[in-house]
Length: 256
Image (tube, rainbow, N blue to C red):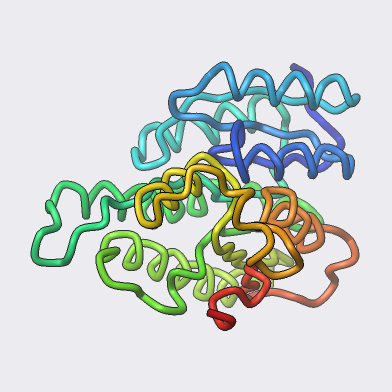
């Protein structure tokens, strides 16, 4: 693969759900996209093929973001293949198991924290130096409106997303002088596999679309709703926004 003159985005967890929508959206906006996956190679390759069919370059990369060695290998491979890196979207994530603090397995706590917070820190540390070489860089951290309420029985997830946001606010200040914008995008309930599993577990809802009439604007948030915010934040239209968190939930948490 020859070096690219187009902006290059690395999207972790980029083959499915929100990550897939972001990968496709950035490609539609003229970027080449490195699509990271942990296990679902088939989904990642399908996303890559869709991007290529639209005329942009794309490649799938297997890496578990909670492992520093994997993160180092991932960033090195993207830079070797594309020749540059302009946009990092830290989207990969996992859910916690809904236990109280007292009943949480320490192994689960560490796994969730490493995936959301440590992994994002590793990737920023590895990717930002390459972004400094470009005219502009963008880092997007996909968090959650869970940090607005810190609901019971979600300690690992709440803690991990709060740490992720702390990383974003800190990095935005550090990299301002390098023309790198760092922003946080925080969805609520989204129509993804994870969202479907969550609502099945907590509310016995098998079809998220059945919730549409009760949701803001008449529908459950979609991956494209989230991707559209990311697309604007990394676009030329965003000239002056950094160090911000945008909640993408239609104010659902405040209407209940």
